[in-house]
Image (cartoon, rainbow, N blue to C red; front, side, top):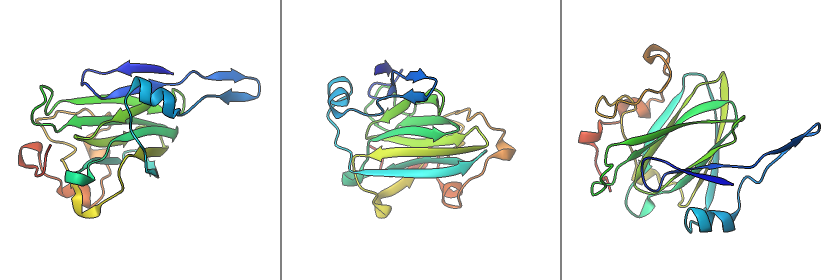
Amino acid sequence: MNIIKTDIEGVVLLEPKIFGDERGYFFEAYSQRVFDQEVGPVRFVQENESKSCYGVVRGLHYQCGEAAQAKLVSVVKGRVLDVAVDLRRSSPTFGKYVAAELSEENKRQMFVPRGFAHGFAVLSEEAVFQYRCDNYYAPTQERGIAWNDPELGIDWGIPTQEVILSEKDTRNPLLKDAIDLF
């Protein structure tokens, strides 16, 4: 597995070695040993999957306090722009973000450590997205940042008029107004 560091410390892309032939392909999607050696010791306790259509933006989400989560995310079907925003106030990259395309073709995964907001935009007709979390979902500790915060300036790769949001995500505050940051 190839580990690709990003511009923000702690956020990494994991790129598997894919072995293909006339039957199809095989790759090692996850190895605890490799992850511990190359990224750090993280124990994942919950795995989630979502299916979304083109234009859906999910995020930017995080959990605060003792419920904070690290995530290892990937795409099983389709293509997304995956985004991690640094919410660690003491970090030199506070308010900066990493964005990477994850797809069924490139089979990349992104590791998003605790202290980050996370979201993704569906760039294909449909996408099936998976994420492993190192902490359980805690609805009372869930928070969000506005996907279109001008201070962040994220280009989601979708025309604004085509973005589809959940009702909850339409109410997320700007980063400057967010509560319970790290």
